View (cartoon, one colour):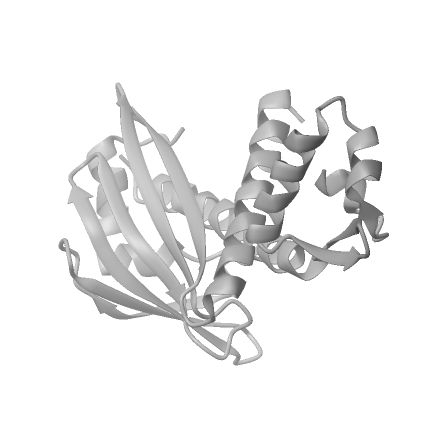
Length: 142
Length: 88
C-alpha cells in the first residue's frame, strides 16, 4: 500500500524522468532511459549500470495502458545476460483506497523465445511449477 | 512427484507410484506431462521405465524468479521513497 493517490503512482510509471529514479533493484544501479514511448504498442528500453561499469539492457513494448488503473508491458533482457531472450510480461494494477494506492505487480515468464521449442517448454514447465510452489508458500503464510 | 525425484536418483514408475496414493495410470499420466514439459527424462530398461529429474530446467527458472523478485522488491521500496520525497 502506497501513501499516495493513484494518479500520482501512475505518473511514476508514465513519466520517464520519474521512472529513472525508482525502477531499479537498488539505488546502486544507475538507470538510463534510452527509449520511452508510453502508449499502447510503444516501446521502451532501459540501461542499468552497476558501480563496476557492467551494463544490463532491458526492453519491451507497452501492451495495455489504462490511466490510472492498469499498465501491462513485455520485459525482455538483452544479450549477453544469462536471462537474455526469456520472454516475460509485467502487469501493474493500481487500486485506489481513499488517498492510498494498492499496487499489484505480477511478472510472468513464458520461456525462451530464442531457443528451441523443447527448451522453451522445459523452462515454462519449471516456471509454472515454481510459481505454484511460491503461491502455496504465500497462502500458507510462510 | 518432483519432490520424490529431487534426491537425484532415477526411480521407476512403480516406485514412484508406491509413494503416492494415486492409481498407476494417474502416475503414468502425470509423468508423461512432466516429461512433455521436459522436467523429467525417461530411460527405458527392458520393461522398466526409469525417471530422472532435469534439475537444470528448474535451476534456470528458479534463478530468474529470484532475480525478478529481488528486482521488484527493491524497485517498490524505491518507489515508496520517491513518493515520500515528492510529497502528495
